[in-house]
Amino acid sequence: EPEVTQTPSHQVTQMGQEVILRCVPISNHLYFYWYRQILGQKVEFLVSFYNNEISEKSEIFDDQFSVERPDGSNFTLKIRSTKLEDSAMYFCARRKGSTFQETQYFGPGTRLLVL
Amino acid sequence: QKEVEQNSGPLSVPEGAIASLNCTYSDRGSQSFFWYRQYSGKSPELIMFIYSNGDKEDGRFTAQLNKASQYVSLLIRDSQPSDSATYLCAVNLNTDKLIFGTGTRLQVFP
Image (cartoon, rainbow over the protein chains, first blue to last red):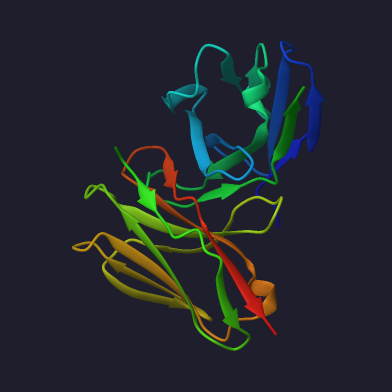
């Protein structure tokens, strides 16, 4: 049973264009994350989001990136002006419990290709 | 520098054997430890988590944690070809993020 769904599954865009990746929780979750995985590399944390606010972000998550939960349901990651090096799999994850130690469950991912 | 280290492999084992996957981490403040399985082109799928020193068993899988040695391992008993995947070790330092290793590719051959 998927914990979250993500749309689109694949996206191809031109360098400099804006992209919005979406994460749709199955139930009423509060803790969300975005990770990315460049082909052949490790999974990297981007940002965590709780109660409609960023709780933590990595050095990767610069001004080009933003997250929001505009309608209280979908959780989005926006990349304002894509670069070639943004090509990666982007995973949304969610955490059930209220403590950091608890498990994060990953969505199926969006494969982003920047040309 | 907070790091999680894994041998990239591939680790090749025959069907029915025990596969042993290892992970070391650099930060002694690490609180919780996770093993995810990732098939090619797919997302990480949780296999096991462990918080306390010692062993934790779940079916064919056993996670072992030694905080003094900063070492966590995953044993897969009776390995099956369907276990062939990349196994990711992830560590939480009591912050709101997971730090992943590069993963170990496991190949189980019939």
